[in-house]
Length: 234
Ligand SMILES: [Zn+2]
Image 1: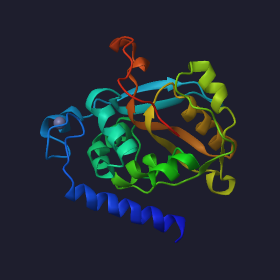
Image 2: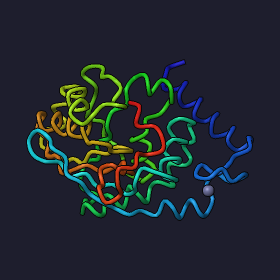
Image 3: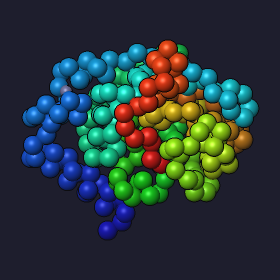
Image 4: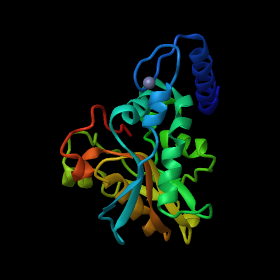
């Protein structure tokens, strides 16, 4: 069977099983519901922006939610437990980030690429899934040029050098395109900055980036509290 078909079958089985097996709320573990009303309310977007340093000019990143509590748990359920049906609950956050950025329907949404290992493990690409659930087509213009180490546990500058030169864009398609980068979570913005660099090098006009959530440490008003969970595996 071709790999894509294997993944499609696996995803379909996972969704079918989810209907048969007992579920609990991804946000609070309440039984027999995939996301309770209280947790849906916790996902009401509070858009915010930050600016990260990138080659070719600063990159503004808009995020719909803070990566903590229910938002972090729902993202983890999607990524680590394959509960892809929950992605729709994050659509308002992505839409809010796009709206907050004043980004219309005429721009190309470019998801950050997923590593081969992560794709093999999950059978789907998280940023692409989020874009699709928001009713927009993801345009995959980026790919990995080399492997990178795990970003977790690295400081801001170490993250930058870890991902520096790690992405390339499809030159013919990227040239002249007005693009917005999409990812699930932004931490320091190092990977988004690298994506912007690669796309700009290929001639694209990078308008900014949107993510479903941003880790709280990027927002000094919320103190130095760390997110209560994992950080992105690529
Ligand atoms: Zn709940």
